[in-house]
Length: 167
Image (cartoon, rainbow, N blue to C red; front, side, top):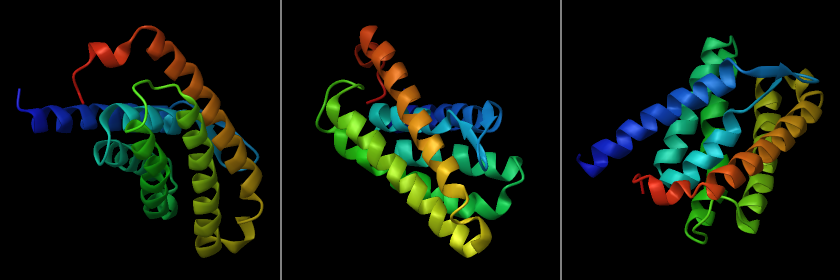
């Protein structure tokens, strides 16, 4: 199969999985909801690299906002998720494993990017929620990091990067 077509196809599959993990599997938080989509965005970016992981996250989570009734947040989500993937683009070049100290640090940085990005979006969309949403966004960031670590450890244990040919 053509390598570029393979990456496009894998990106589409990751986009769909990120959408489902963001839209369909969510838990109410202080404001908004906690979902597993960010965790898969992190893994996708480590597996596929740039720009593929960024595209998958932007599409999957952006469409989840639209489908979930958060249309006003969709443009911000696209920007925030691309920026949140950036630390993992850097880490991908530094480690041959999904779980590593740099990837844990990247998940913390991504959480800060998500929290700050949605704070900025709230200032534009609805100033009343800017400060109220911070705890929920921090809970989302922590949950994403924990889920990412658990899945990354499991995938490293089965040596998933040796078994797939996306890179």
